[in-house]
Image (cartoon, rainbow, N blue to C red; front, top):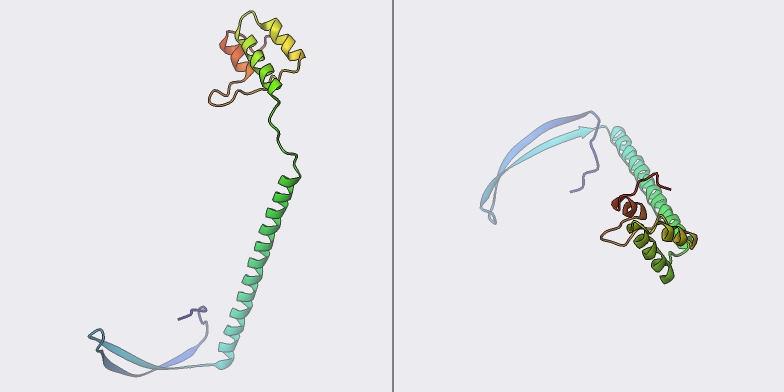
Length: 149
């Protein structure tokens, strides 16, 4: 059975009768009600046309949403494709960063840390997991202050 929607119209109903039937497969008795329904055909056709128009509008909206989603997905993919690939930092860079962090850990390593900064050590470097410490965190852990220059 297909349900299209609710009918909003005037109609007349007349009871025709009630029958009792027996289903031998299920061994059950059923009451069968018979009704006669009379309605205006122009009103019924008007309802059917409204349903068709509503369904057509819903399908059109769904298609537009699907097109928008596919377009946004394509543009997102294009943006990812056009971005330059992220390359891992060179091995020398990691050695420089490790030396910089070690210099910051030592209380007498400030001059060495300054030299490593001149060699392009990254102050925003983050150690790999699980510690993920930054140079500033190492300075603070070794007794330094944020405003130290």
